[in-house]
Image 1 (cartoon, one colour):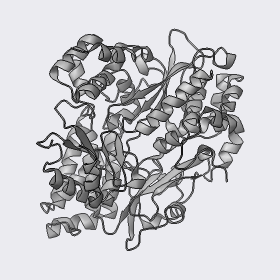
Image 2 (image 1 turned 90 degrees about the horizontal axis):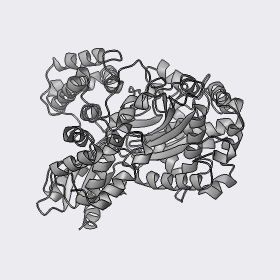
Image 3 (image 1 turned 90 degrees about the vertical axis):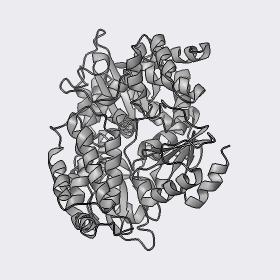
Length: 154
Length: 424
């Protein structure tokens, strides 16, 4: 069930568009911000609220990369694997993160603290290599800097 | 030297708020424009030779002139700012939105006015959290001051401008994919014709312009097309350009320079040359979907015409530098993996071809390459071209591949011959 608060926030976007379905990706985002990820039931609830078929909404949920259809950890690490970061040391960062967290790209640590995901260019290439943890950007990374950054997220 | 796009920037600080922006002459262009007719604005921008800064370089004025020039209440027009910057190696639109958000808002109102739109969106990438906060504030301030909303400055013209945040997919930045995304669909391309100018969002005339393009508009209206043309060194192309450089250069960054500045000026003077101990092997002049150039091209001007002549394209104007200690095959693999992952899957050459290319390069990097792999790569570069695909994503992916085959063919063959990556 969508909460009243979720419904209110989803509905607040309606005036910006011509049809309600325009809000569908954002509605999934609204649910995800509160619940961490989007379950099958959430997909159905969003579809009902917007007057869409659940399959249509799932088609969006599986298309847009920032909508998670599987559980994620308390913090999501998005490590940029695009070209500027690749040139400046992505491979070393990835290896360090995988070893430190004990998970491959796409994995969630057993204690549920971190999910590690690859991300396309984060648009701060003058500070490559970079990553984003939750909403925070971390710039000019080195493997040494990573441990100190990870320690900030509990 | 005039640097209109970054004149209000405060490095490291908060961007100018409404009062500061107004004090610097902000929203004067809007006052001026509302006293003119939309066709006057279109013709001013057309004469200014403002070429689209998203990468394709299509004349902005011509794009505007393709929507119906008379307002039809049954067919309202829409205007969209493409702020879904996700071209690998590109960070210029973020720079502009964070540095002076009101400049983009004013440009969006002017552009919407020119195409008779009463509803407009800034389609922003999810990753740009700081830009989102700054744009939200600027839009609220502009609405409060009467620069947005009903009856703007008593002119009778009304516009609602909304910030739309995407949920992540390279295809959202492709104009037609963006329209589908705004309609709440998967961001897949549409078959053309009809073009968006006639039949775009919800079947209505729609114009999509890049952030940097839109940011140029207030300055053209304020200071005139002759002034704008004179900012540039390139014949037939007006304005300044936000250039950038990333990779192992001494000072990676972004700079506003006359359009037509040379590779050498940007790379040596502004980026400070290569880091100590590294040599230049090549560079992509304008994001991941441009062709590699090499140290033989240092004197080429970074404008649309000259880059085309040199065999590449200006693209986004933010160059990615390859040095001698990074493997060209590895770099190419990073590029091709990006495109394969971001393919929307709508048409076969892209959905099937790009992963094939990526897997072939992966095999070379891991020492499993076969001599026949060269032909596989060549075939893809030859056949995945505009006309064989729905949109430009896959042909854009082939630019780096085709040029790597030309300039780094020996490196590719060496991977196959030695059955390993010589850089590891």
